[in-house]
Length: 286
Image 1 (cartoon, one colour):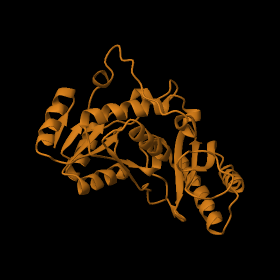
Image 2 (cartoon, one colour):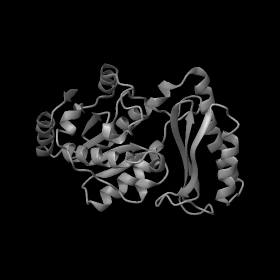
Image 3 (cartoon, helix red, strand yellow):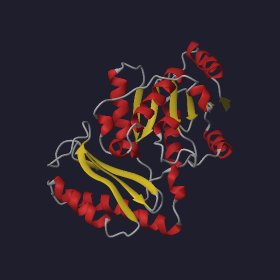
């Protein structure tokens, strides 16, 4: 496994692969890898000749009061995990490589970026789209793998690829959970033992929504209210949002029909966690 930290190093390797006609799979990450990331790597390796993983904690997607400086980082740990998985190349650039002095260009996906997480994290998806487009231009992947845990991110990036005619296929893959049901996230490391237990209320509320939907409930507002009531019984939980929306437009729904996303963001103590379930073609995907 090789590591590149400059554009020149990365491009030399990519161009060599392109000349050989190799299919390139790509997994962009912010590091501190967990089983969710590794599941994306494994799928990339199945469908591509070579796999590139980027590790870059992107300052442009963090707000001024967010956790950019404290976000967990451990390159040696990540490197060992990726080497074990048989990754071909890791791109690990410093901030000045991605955003040199005088950087002024940004990418936005209007409307979609302002809903759900975008409401409480203004500028977040502008930062996500900007860095992902830059990485796509550098890595030139045939496929890029993302997890459904960040459902809004997947939807926004699919729209960016469509609108900008980018020659890359976005491959969304299932959300991965820990043994207790908590959705895997690098930010889970922030949780104390008590907070970790409290965080299970996110999954419990989604389980309640699933139960109601399976029993035939079609009123989205009722489902949302029941979820809020359940989360509110947990003293350490503070709701950012609980929404039932259209999976493509992210518009709030009145009735459960078509493709649906049930999404929530909840603070457990000071840690903001997200989770969701999707209803596609009449089936529930978690």
